[in-house]
Image 1 (cartoon, chains in turn brown, blue):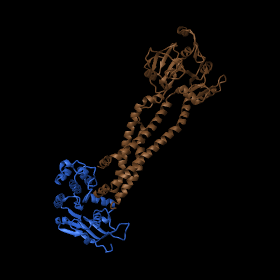
Image 2 (tube, rainbow over the protein chains, first blue to last red):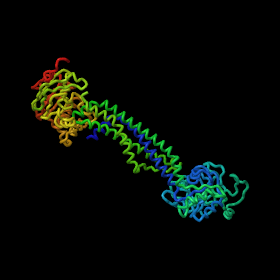
Image 3 (cartoon, rainbow over the protein chains, first blue to last red):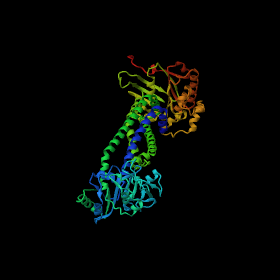
Image 4 (cartoon, chains in turn blue, brown):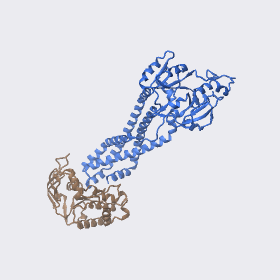
Length: 413
Length: 225
């Protein structure tokens, strides 16, 4: 009966209740969205690379190295000599070493030159290895393995031919159109930048640049594809490389050795540490967003409280009647609180529904930023979230509720 | 004795020197029906609020159905009122957004011993009060005034009170409705052995009562106001 009274009373005041409900829904939406996206972004970021002990590149900022080597964001500052790579890869502490060569693209997706070891040793998330959805790793110079997004968005399947472009802009005028690549493998989705990468062998990268100088094609070059296959395509330089060590304890020693490497200035970073450094930089933004979301929510709750308070002014006859029937003043207090909680819970439902719909609609846009945001917004923290907003609305609604209580206590006036 | 007041004095806290009521002694016997008349603003509503325990007297004894209301806590008064006193107002007797059946059901919620009254009982009572069944599930503010007042009696009687207090219940009704309402009310009161205190300024209603008291006789204020 109590519940019915609260519901029907709200339904009776549709106009103001719907407005308060909308304000609350928007604020819940903002709160949930900020909370969800920051959680998902963090997950997505920290899942990008795992099992790699060190990432090595030319000397630059550690964030910069992480961004271009792992996230394919930004541009490499400089290359490192192939000899340096070989030198460090032969260090007895090193279990495996994967070279990376960046700089070309295909329709806006970055191309990464590497070795077959990449598919064997690189892992993401909780130590997941890359696995093939279709096909296999590259064997020949002009073989290419696609990330799942690349294959899906561009509609490639095994055996298709594609042409790489020089540089990383999405519309490039300097195409390596004389040397088409054949799709030999498509990777399973990983939810990391791997999905958006085309993988070719280092030899392939060398081969397409064989008759190029300073970023432009030399006219009149006549080396045929058959001739290239026979050449020994040893790269002169690479962009970066990833190291796996035999024992994690030696990580810092190897890192120091690389950083002090005499023949070439190089930088070795621990991906985990740099990821958290990156995340700390983001946390100011993240916290600001969260603060704004909380302020929006407080505004909405105060609006709700004001709406209830003004409703009580119109309901003094109703309060009097309830008192005569035998309702204690505390009943009126609880009735108003109940109305606030009902509005809050309804707006949570609406806000959560709205967010799910929006995330569903915005999946493509988000994945463009390498943010893989799950459309499932419910987690164990959702319960705490609901409890917090209900408590907040109960506290705010205490003002009108107390008003009703006092009115009920002194109904003769 | 259903009602027994002695040396009751009431003044609002913000004007303690101006008593609104001063009743040396006033008694109503069980199953008696009393018509109390007096001018508007003469303290009629205050008297009824004292009888129902909404207001506590400034001094004196208020004994209703053998219980001393002036000794009870507010919570006890609320429970006592819910269980044993029915109340009909001049207007706004029903929660406007509940339907007729829900309005009648509402007092059972505050009555401790009472489980929610069976639907049949509520509908039986409404039928007896000539509330037509197509009005039972209409929102209260969509009913005619006459129908609303009938539902109000049902609401007041659902907990089987021993005392019914009526505060000008007919003043918003037209002549026909008023006569129908009065005869219905009187027959129900007689049938259920209920004590009735009926307050009105309309002397023409006194024909339905054997005992007629003027408020000015009950309450003797020192002629300073």
